[in-house]
Image 1 (cartoon, helix red, strand yellow):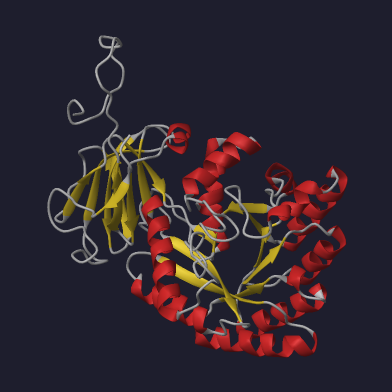
Image 2 (cartoon, rainbow, N blue to C red):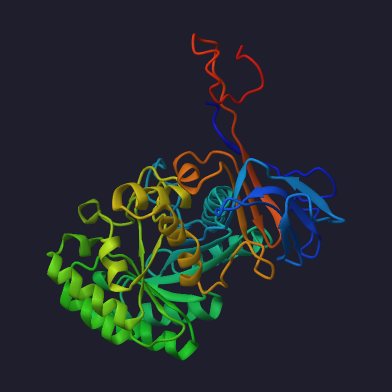
Length: 416
């Protein structure tokens, strides 16, 4: 099959491209299939869903997009990306933190993920050490350049926060929040005093009213229990990931840890497509055990073609596919992990394909959720009520003895 590439969005009338359509323009999605089997028209306006009606029942004065043959879903979100280091796996020499280069790769990575359907992304950015605050400034500039296409938020990640060496890191973290980092985080496992690190992050988050998003392998149940106890009740909330170490613990120990996380109201972001740390700490959090305990589990992409993962697609639907195929989740629950739960982890409003909800949508060619998670090539992405990305794929076969069997076929004629 020819390689799929994002294409400029188009429609049958009016303007639906990023430069032509405003948030207040009306857009009609015609002939969409919903997960309950209905075929509907969906009218969007003012960045929200105005109406959902039976196919052919709605009218609009603006653009019309034919989505017949597509399944219409709430758009996924990316809760765990690393835009500052993305797409560097094949670079020679040490990682460059040149501001223009960081902005370029953060923007390219975000657009790649937007093409897959993620209209909101949270990028973890290292602060301190060699890069200082330059990488954060570059990712914040990428955020501004993406406005109207996707919502990009940043997590400031200092290396050390305790002791004499941690004083600079703490000052850097405060400056990062003043610069525009909307989430405070980091990796307490890398600090000589993990508990002190968490205390410093939680105190700063409480002071500024920021969410917290921490990296941890969660391989030490006692440390994880202390973290959960400290985080409990913090508003607007605490997210942990990737927690792959929980899957290496004895079942009873992991179950107790899951109960503690549930009681604290902590959200866990697992990374089924690959980790974002050392190879010896790979593995996915025990998704079914966590969900059974009542923990909110979202799924993210993690490293995207960098030193921690030389491959990576940054595709939320692949993450959902892996949750279903490897972890036994129902397709509906798997997709929720990359859509509704991921959006909740990012503090975003709920999306349903119903009137009044935000017009953050993904149309995927196919008629059943299990099918589109398995083979999701063609996609149309809607952000704030307008089409912002479109990927089209064509599969072609040469003639064979299978003719006459009425097999599905899509193409533009015989291949040359």
